[in-house]
Each structure stands twice: as C-alpha cells, then as structure tokens.
Length: 126
Image (tube, rainbow, N blue to C red; front, side, top):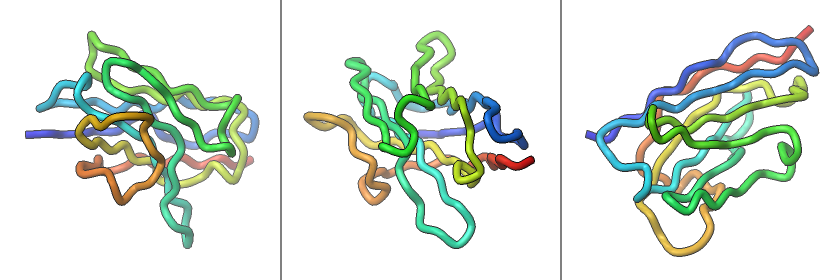
C-alpha cells in the first residue's frame, strides 16, 4: 500500500530554516513523480516543488526558487524539502504527494497527483 508521511514542520522566525521530510513506503520512488504542496488558511493549495523518479529532474514554483531545495534520500526512501530564508507567506500545511511516472517534467498541479500524506504545519512568525 502506497503511503506518504510528512514530518519536520514547526514554528520558525522569518529568515529561518526548516527541513521537511516525506517518508515513502509501498512503492519505488524511481517510478513516481513526488511533489510538495502547501495550503495557507483561506487559500487554495499550491505546488511548491517536485522531483521526477530516478532522473531527479526538478521543478520549483517561482515563489520558492533560490530558497527551497528538494532532494531524495534513496537509503531512507524519503523526499526532503530544505526551506531557507523563510517568509511569513510560506506559512501553511505542507503536503507531499505522488503520481506514477510519466514522460517529461513533473508538474505543480495538485489534481494530477493520486496519493497524499496527512500534512505537516509550517508557521513562519516572529
């Protein structure tokens, strides 16, 4: 059974850093696109970053380019999101999601992802 479990959220001051992890089980990461999404209170869910299977091709939302880094740890079967220079507008519930491998780049559209984790809260506030 495909499962995704997020961890690493918390409260951090503006300018600080957090590292989120998405632990995967029940499937091989090489054969899936895995993405990070977030949802702020009262707003729609938006894509943050995604990574493609074994190729590790990566995509980022413009709002996080240069600040966030997505990576994979094959030994631990995790997809990590290093978040630096955090801003209050980065606040939200962060979810990881997976979809079976397709040709081309991964996309930051939540409607194409099939499996979701339960989310982890990130709050950026002084």
